[in-house]
Length: 374
Image (cartoon, rainbow, N blue to C red; front, side):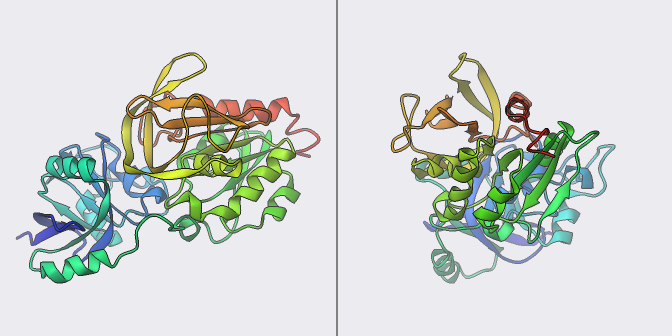
């Protein structure tokens, strides 16, 4: 018989359901994701570190899980919230059920939650701290513990999820470029897409000194996604500026986009409830085309299509059609560009994978793979 469980938010609201996955307690920022599929990629995305993720799609777990769809070594989300967990799973790639996967990896989850009501609550009041706990937990004591948790603002979570030591992802086929990937919580699919384009990718820890990275003179720098507040990851800014000054192409996504903005003087701020899902429309300013994008972030770069305050060297390249936030940047003189969303699309649509081609094209135009890459 399933055990009762509850989700409590820091404003005291309680949602009740049944325990799913691992038993116990979990604390984190409660956020929602609107993807219809891809729950395993969501769970293993390091950008969800410190968060309790609610899926708005009502039926989760129906195709099981498998080792190939992991975006990191294992689940990163602090907890998982679903409306209805499928009692069966069926897919030719499936290796185990979602319930067994969560239980085996120690992820506390809850099913039976009114996720529509939860989403409306967060959309109105903003993402907030919360906890998953057994149904018999004393609510007053739990609320006190929730309010004692750290706020997401000011947290450097990226360094904690970064690789402890560098490693190399070999190029598929002949190596054409040497790319350094700043790991702030990089997803494996981003590295695969670079490797498919002839890049030998050296993935480095987030704390790697700037002078060491610049001295290596890579053909390109990839600045990855990751969790937490970009304002707390200031050590990356010197590297971004240093390589840009050396005419090394720099490509950033998600947290990397925010860090590129900050490196050239822009400021960032926390969104009310963030963008998370696989259906966010983004307008490309160069030609008006609309990309349907996968997103996962709670912070944004301040500005609009007319300018980026504090960063005159940057211009906006993409804008979010839902709320007008800046979704893309490029440097006016350097080969530096970034997007707020996830062009590696794991999960999500493939509209934006051309950005990886743009990155290698920038390296090719600067003679990368020749004298610099020798």
